[in-house]
Image 1 (tube, rainbow, N blue to C red):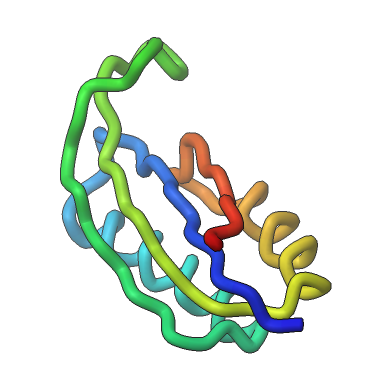
Image 2 (cartoon, helix red, strand yellow; image 1 turned 120 degrees about the vertical axis):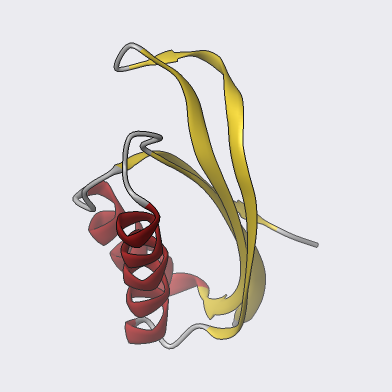
Amino acid sequence: MIRNYEIMYIINPVTTEEQKAEVIEKVNAILAAAKAEDVKVEKWGERKLAYPIDKKETGFYVLTTFKIEGTELKEVETKLNITENLMRYIVVKKD
């Protein structure tokens, strides 16, 4: 069953604009490979983190909404775990 999800992820703030674009492109490619539909990307920009991660106080936030089969989600998360310059992410099911 296809459901709506959103993923919020934080890119390492010391990366260049080009590297940030590459990370966003890679996440979108991971979603495309998992047959995600209606992928929409919102760049929130650099913001202060709630707590330091790897001694960094800020991170570049990106929100992506998409529709995907629930069974494909595990593979997406597995690939996100090994994506370079991705500090944290969370996937949330939307109603």
